[in-house]
Image 1 (cartoon, rainbow, N blue to C red):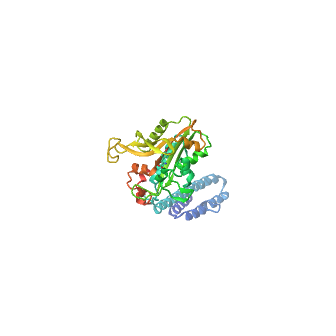
Image 2 (cartoon, helix red, strand yellow; image 1 turned 30 degrees about the vertical axis):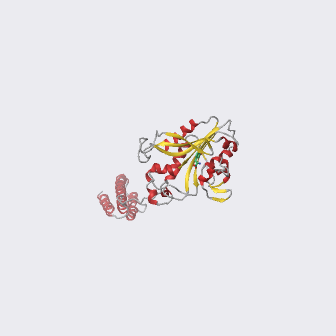
Image 3 (cartoon, rainbow, N blue to C red; image 1 turned 120 degrees about the vertical axis):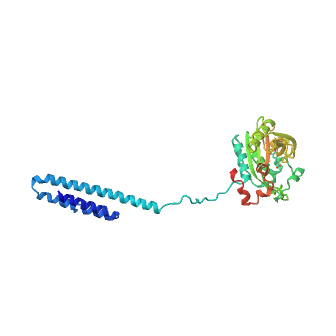
Length: 344
Ligand code: DAH
């Protein structure tokens, strides 16, 4: 029996002293494999007298279990130490600033375009586009502005040749869409886009700017529909509850025509510097689609009526975000654009 105890303490000592997983495995083989020391002890059993065999077998088993348990424990200990070491060497410093990729921001004109589109898509309108290099036909003729009409002077244009020009207003898209409808109604559209006019650039003028055109044609469309729709759009763009008023105006493609004012978004209508103490701010042009325009597009004006409006997006952006120079919208100065991060 003493021999077993000696063997056991020898094994446990070796196991306790071993360094590294490889050496431990070698030790396991030396003790527990088929050619190992415990197996060699077992082999001695057959030479023993019968009555000694059970005690001998039991003792060797106890020894085997003790060695196995010690090896197992050591294995775990080594794995734990390895992990500890790994954690130490691979430690990351969470107090370091993370690398944040710089992201762009939406341009204020894109923000305004998106707000208007969202507002009208929510009302079931479709979004329409048209070419920026436009035919005189759609920009003027079909909009009831014939060749010798004085209204052409208000929109000094970039002509490419006698029949092509950079469109001067998004009303050109309206005329294309009306014609493409082939007399079918209802039509409900919003058309944002760039337009161009010969103008000297200054703080409030730009030879290139943006508009959004709205158009609704159907049976029984009235000025009341126009007013309700515009009130909704203006409230979406500025403040809920912003009121509007119509003033008589003139556009060749609408009859009657209205200039639309909104209550000042700064003072709410009380009067301040922004609204020149009137409480009102001019915001867009609109009207009921001229019967002759409908007729030219093949839509029966006796049966159908419609409203239209055109809003300048720079004007909306400048009022909404307090921009004082229209050229800032086109200079691509990243410092200016960054100011709109919070609106994105
Ligand atoms: N096209 C006009 C302009 O550029 C704006 C406009 C006014 C459009 C009245 C319309 C409208 O559709 O009904 O000044």
